[in-house]
Length: 191
Image (cartoon, rainbow, N blue to C red; front, side, top):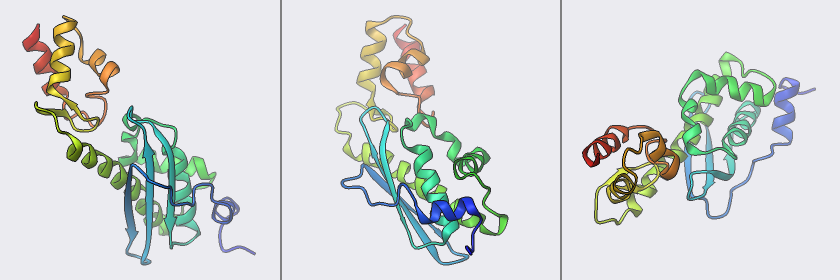
């Protein structure tokens, strides 16, 4: 007889993403201080912001293993721009749907540690982009490493281009959104 509900036990015994991936683009860690367990998430992200692969490691219980496996499954195959929900209650619903069972309230710290690890991995990716930027002009979009020169050239070549069109063509402004105001200022000044 298992200590866990059937769905959790299934994920615990046969996790799909329990691996350390070779040469990840980024990684992050989370911890549940209530039980002393930790979890790490590593992601492989292409230049367009698509998460091509992911893996996790953990010394946690079945709930943490199931949650980590679900989180990696949820983010894999998605673009970074589609993952803003990880900081909301929708993430808990998505993990529960992926597992097929809710994580009990007294084990919610296991799920939160896994979400924190995935968020930390995405923040690590953003920092890597910042550190790699070597352009002569200001870096406008730190999520995707898009410089002022790229936005200015696009605005000059396509008069009247909208913020949405810039995001569609370059990804700039489609991540965390903090650069949208700067992009709009560049577009306004070129028009």
